[in-house]
Image (cartoon, rainbow, N blue to C red; front, side, top):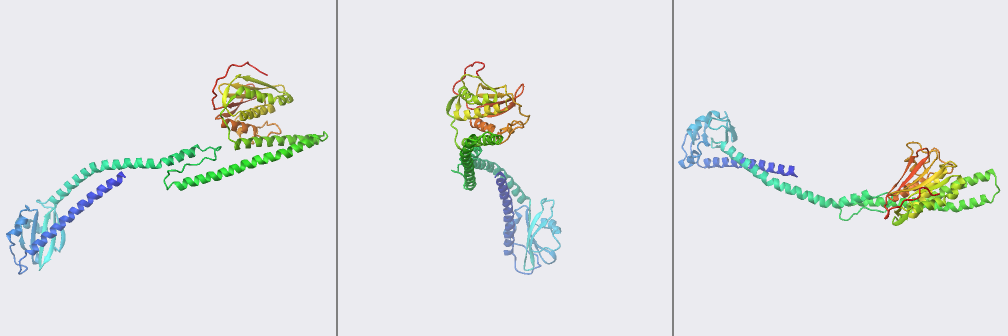
Length: 443
């Protein structure tokens, strides 16, 4: 905009100068017309004197404007200033035709002279005018005009620029809100849409297209979740029937193998159903939960499994540590972590569940550990480590990581000093009360 204003000022100045030159040329032609009207009738080559009232108009110009009337062969018939005519005559071209011409500079006219000639009855009426006055007028006008224009147009340009910035920002403010809304969309929130109110009409089709794409994505995700949940739920009944029939059959190596495969499939279906429920249902994080009670319930529920595996379970840490979250989801996460640790812990070792301030639960085992660099990969669905137990599906840690993320926290895996693995569940939702010291060990 500023460049446009400066170009406009330059164009006006250029046009003003051109107009001045045009007016100067028109004035010269009018003066020649004035001389033509006062030419005497008679022989074309005879010298003559024009009336004093005519010549005085040119003598008063102090030599700036001179007329010459030439006859055949360039003979001087009349002039307003014989001295100037004697100086300027040698500078005339050999053949002077009608129209405009320019003479080179002279001692009296360093800017040169501009002339206009016209043929009238065999005589050439020539008007010569110095350029000093005209150039001075042009220079003065240009300088004053540009100086005035800069001080006049600069504030106007800055004001226009400020108004344009404010207008654009106000006009694009709804687009900024739509961008912020797009940034806030998370994978677990497919139902959110970009606000289309107040947007410029040029941007509205784009926002509508993005909202329509989000709607299609939401329908696709809902269909996938529904399919996974229905498939997992539908498989539970035939698996239960299959397990019951295997329990009624006589023991044999084939029946034991089938029962093992059935248990593995039941575990996989159960985990798929848990993940489908977590993804399809909103997690209520407004409950006040005692992490120690949740950990105690998980340990108590898995005690029979620990006894069967020959592994001891230990619950340590804070006796009362209250946070806000979803109790059922946290219980499911702890059950998955403890169950996973029991699957890797050797017989005769201890799996420790530690409730730590401010909002952490650590599950430690003495298993084979995790190879360096594999920790993040094992948190993805269906990813299993090199020492994975037979029958696992690779979904337990993924479910725990999803629950932790829903609580604003995270799940991390790290090698344990002395061998084994430590799974640390960190919650991001701070509880309303602080915990108290607990006994060092509770079994």
